[in-house]
Image (cartoon, rainbow, N blue to C red; front, side):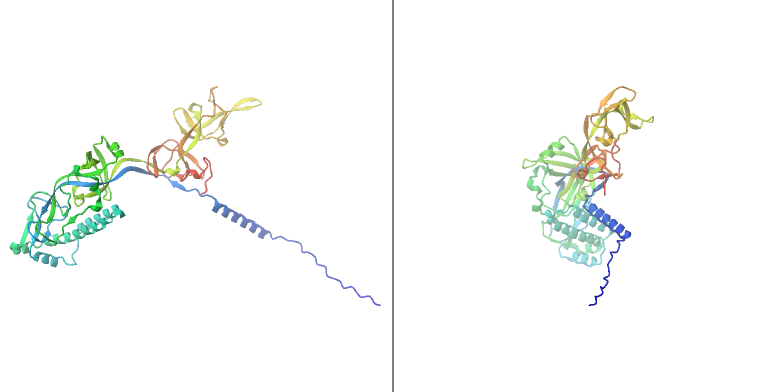
Length: 468
């Protein structure tokens, strides 16, 4: 029987592994970049603050009632009233203040002359803008009724501006009205106001806590063209430049202001700061109130009964530092006369005593100084500084020795201009809820535009590398 031939089976050989070096390098770079991005995202960022020069003003805000020498004038005749003077303008004795038109003829003539095309002068527009600006800066949601008071004031002023200009050109027509028309002139010199309330005759000593409730306050503003009855309030005349503000005082403020004869005052929203003569008085309810007396700026407040103001108790200039940036750092104390200096007087360091088999010797150790007083220099603690507790330093050209160990804390911030934290001492002058004002130009201190750590708790201390 013939034998079958065996078929030759192909033998498979494994191909040798030839790594792609470029692919491996790319993968390593990708892993490194991914790790770097991950660590960067997870790492806490250190926020910084740029030091600026400025001032902190400590003040207390008050609302006061204005008192003036004022008298309300009433009409003798019923009819349409038209004014010749604007709010806050001065009237001499005999000056025409307003007129009463019994038939309404004059009002019709004014309406014809004061049509919708009448334009306000730049002076008129400036006064309206000032009033709107003052309102926007002092508005409080809790006193929404002030919106309506301000609207009425603006309406009255616009009508007043237009009507006064029209009346100047109607003198010849006015003469023809005869008995149906009455012109009223001022019987005294003073400032004219058309805002009338029930407090014209009130005296400072009559105030009570209820007097400062603005929600219960009402004011009547008489407008040109308005129909008035006989005996109705027409305007009021302020006959003295002297005026006062009365405001409530807390017990702390009574102590703080006791003995003061004047106080600096800043009026909110009016870009006005001045000083007022200060005194204290007892109100009708037995409470203590402050009183500020002025002899200037009467016209700026002629329409107001209440005024918001601030008493400036302190204003200090310096470098402004956030409170969160301030911390305390502890340093070794080293006597000043142990410092080794150059021929020019620059600090080099301290001679540290070292020990070996050949005996005792000294080596110069450079040290950063962070503060000084009459007796000591303040140097960093830790091995990085070259000196630790228990080391001895030697006075130059002397056998005197001093052992490192005594320490003290210093208040300051962490400067990061060079990419790592460097403690800088501060001398606080004053503060408020958010900032300290620190002395400019102090030794071992800060300069304007330095970058400091915003939150001192976010770093571990001196020499920490900062990633921003």
